Amino acid sequence: MRLIDADEVRANLTYEVAIPVVRAAMIALSKGETRQLLRSIMHFDDGRMFGVMPGAMGDTDVFGAKVLSVFPRNFEVGRPSHQGVVLLFDPVTGELACIAEARSITAIRTAAASAVATDALARPEARRLAVLGYGEQAATHVTAVSKVRSLERVTAWGRSLERAVAFARRMQAELGIEIRAVATAEEAVADADVICTVSAAAEPILKGAWVAPGTHVNLVGSSFAGPVEADDDLVVHSRFIADYREGVLKQGAEFLKAKEAGLIGDDHVVGEIGEVLNGTLPGRQSAEQVTVYKSLGHIVQDLASVQALLAIPPKR
View 1 (cartoon, rainbow, N blue to C red):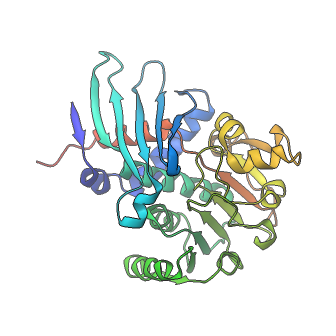
View 2: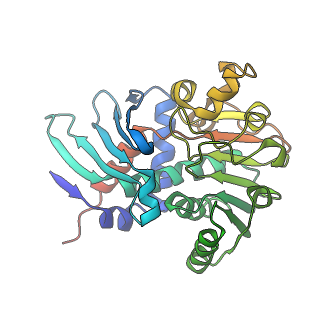
């Protein structure tokens, strides 16, 4: 059995590896070549959660699960909010083949998926990115999106301006891109071509009225029914595409809130990003259209990432 720790994940699951791996996994999901159940989440007080995500890459391919705890307040004291493992089983013998650290895989594969969606849905000339949030997913998203668009400027916003400034300085030094922290979310997205919401917000931090025509939005921070990062206006007036349609119909908080208000129906989720990638669903239909990619994350992204890591010999 192979053990893959966080250092090995970060060293080997680069975006050059992760982006094409996740892209292929999302196409396979939309073609019906993979299997997955909706995630099972146990809620505790104070926003704490325990989740299990089972799935398989196919009937004769690897299968497994991600087992994860989410403790949001850990971030306030410098501990990771997401902690767990990805378990990968051998499809021939049924043996446990690998245990991989899940936090780093989740951070990288989620951002890689948003980069894939951005590449497919954002205007080709998109150069300005806004990030709402300043945690680990904010850092991975700036890096990942920079792999699919030549970013000229990034604006960052979070509830603490001091932390947003520190984030901007660190990422600018790391990537060599102009990154500026601003005081309000509205200011951050004012002239953005691409917006990534990667917060732990329970109520909308992004309003449709602030989003310019032609913008692409990745809604990432809310991964279950409950917390909402964007208001109904953005959902209603966008071309709304899921990572996994069944998951978004049952657990996509922004979609569910607009549906409960009677503003949209299930057909508003026009399809999956994998369908756009394999050419069976139109993506962006005009330069002025606002597109939304709703990310819940799915287990086949994790399994495909661990498969890719297993193909790289461990350093001795």
